[in-house]
Length: 111
Image (cartoon, rainbow, N blue to C red; front, side):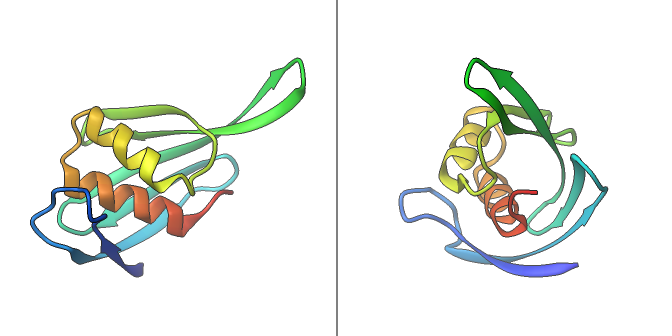
């Protein structure tokens, strides 16, 4: 497992400013399972999808957290930390967990 420090953005209401998170990535190809141990135990499924439009092909990501019941489609990059965090909070994931997931995905990076 990899350990990182999660830092809450200044404008986000968390009861802590920073906390540790450990995560492990499983799977190959275009689907990964990310297991996170932090303030909560969170599983996130990340899928990379290739889409086509008039300009050609492009890739986007879909993320789902089954144990929280949240799914977010059409993510252009896993590096979009603030946008991912906002979408997870809007989908009713607890704020500290949303911050954690977004920053773990950024650390993991696009694949």
